[in-house]
Image (tube, rainbow, N blue to C red; front, top):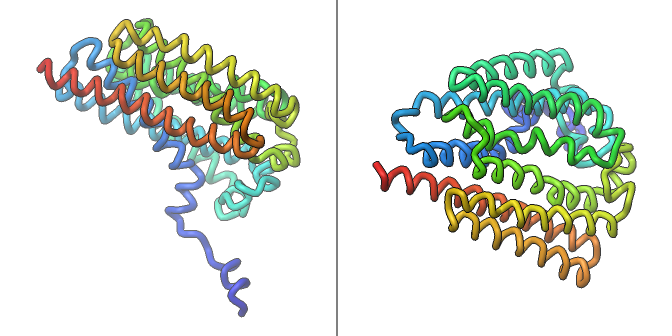
Length: 305
């Protein structure tokens, strides 16, 4: 048997199959904004960490299950277009290393467990968990993703739920300007992030028939729309001043830096390099903004104990 044939026959470990099916990478990245919302809620209402320790653990576990369920349902429904796109061709749902029925039950059980766990913190958190899952599976995955250039905008609603879930799991009221600001920032962040991916994977999305904005309208339209979103993000940063001028300034600086990179990068780079730089900055932006919220909130809680 040749080495190539041996590699083809080698089965993927079960743990890796499950990890790719529920998209553990996306789970990890979404836990950061969820924890930012959670700690910001604790700081805002001066709630002690140990006082809410059971709810914190439930919120983390519940979020993991709900996000994992969304990933499983998405992989199940999208396995036809995933088979076309190079970056997704190795997913277990495409290669057949996990059966569709197994993925379906995995998603159902994780969704039920996640929503239940979140509901044990507050009913609002459970409802937001359900709402985020529903938006990701039905309006985004099953409808808009294959039909409209606004698929990213529609999907961004579910992608921005983690901060709300984290906040609501500690305090069942999401009308505070700070958490609304964090939610809107999380919504807007996704457009420049996913547009940059779509530019770099233009041919794959085109072959799969996914109407991403850069594929349908071109890079110039994407550039203009990106700048509009970034300008809105900068303005939304002022909502954070209701809690902290420092948090507002961090968000303002990071948002302004992103807009400057977009404008000058577009003029000086080819589309591929511009998209790559925008993608890298999006990750830096998310990490710094949400990590700052977490650190600021935790320090505020500790020093006021």
